[in-house]
Length: 227
Image 1 (cartoon, rainbow, N blue to C red):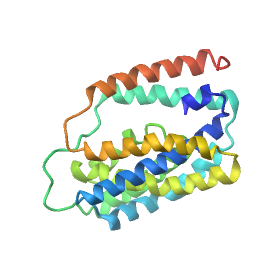
Image 2 (cartoon, one colour):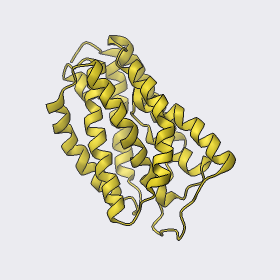
Image 3 (cartoon, rainbow, N blue to C red):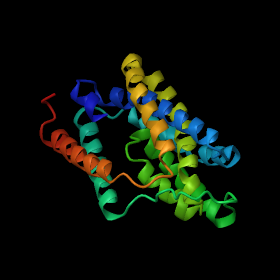
């Protein structure tokens, strides 16, 4: 999204165009997990439905946030993302596949559904860094094992992104060709992410992401017009 802003796209259009790539990336990841034997579509669909009301509201607001306010909001999100990455690490998927999938019920499921509405709102609104919110919720609140956290995550994001993309396309003139080009890279990333999710972490990528986020925050806050 910051890259598209630097290329001159208005914030909401860049935000909406990015949903094309997000959708492709996560659909590829869902398919890859399925082919590797990781699938629980019933639970994934149930969790996805919880995000949809929030995603609709977030996408509607996202289409209306203009100019400098979008830049400031995006910069604030990136600062929070950096803090979350520095404070605690993402739960990582372990190499051993558990024998039985978790079926969260009762209080866990109630809290999970309530929090998923909020995550859906954030995903529909900005999306960036949503995994840092979604993965801990799936693991710590719902008690889902780490192997299946990514499996559910990509399904959930795919589901609410379909709704968010439809709203952005309805309200704004999103750039389909640019989004499709971006989706090519995201699709490859989705395949790699799902394929490597059972291997050890990616320290180098985390360091690189930190550097890029700091640069984007400085650009958005202090040099908004120098695209």
